[in-house]
Length: 167
Image 1: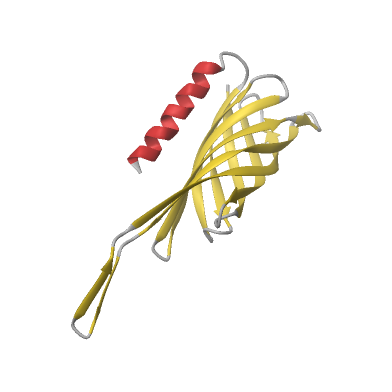
Image 2: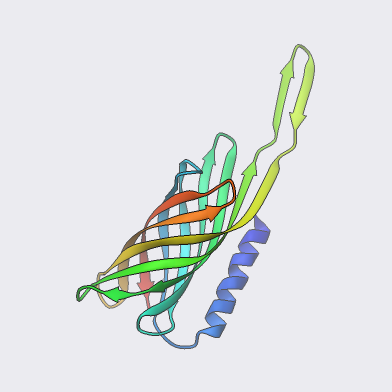
């Protein structure tokens, strides 16, 4: 988990160092993954490179279910369509890194102990989806999005609702 957090911090730093201008947003989100079959929480940072194009980096932690928890890191591009004074629609496309961790198991049957070590599985994939963002004022916004994470043997739909502070 420490390596994943370090990877997320490094990627965020690289994104911030390479984009010197434009609107920035940082925020949090609540997510639900259909393959993980559980809710989770996440953080994101986004930068508008132009008025309509932005890059975003996010990380989501899915709560443990049946001894398995999951984490994903996503680098995505959005193209913003202003459909109202305070409303923006956006398609998204990007790459993701999915990580699943299963706890070890120990069972005793008839005096015989059987145990299995914990296991972690990591896979790369892609994201396709879209969202809507509502600007609450000069600095705050809320959003809802849905994306399909395309990962070998672990594809899922991810629903998210979040809030951001723009500066």
